[in-house]
Length: 143
Image 1 (cartoon, rainbow, N blue to C red):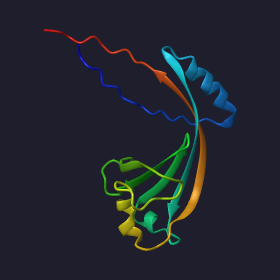
Image 2: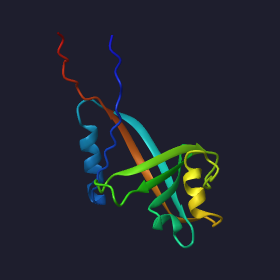
Image 3: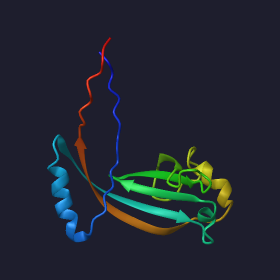
């Protein structure tokens, strides 16, 4: 028996507020789609008062979802061939404040900010509605 490796695809749609309910109904009506619940995601983005991280093409985010916190560092490479490509690291942290001692993410920010304090720049609150859709795989050819 062959193992099946799942692939997660994140689909982000934009619609005017008046069209959100119609878009939701259309997505839920798709074949093989199963509602998987809702979650409120609160993301706070941090930087120094002089925007040191922004100037270095770094983004530091702490996201709260279901009572847990995940710290993410994103690096946008302005010299990359693909303008939409960026590197990203994330890991769980203990609370809502950035953790510069976190091994994967904190270390990438600590040296850049030096001893400067980090401050919240802005916060977003998003209600995510998740669903699972299973694509049919083509039958494999056997020889």
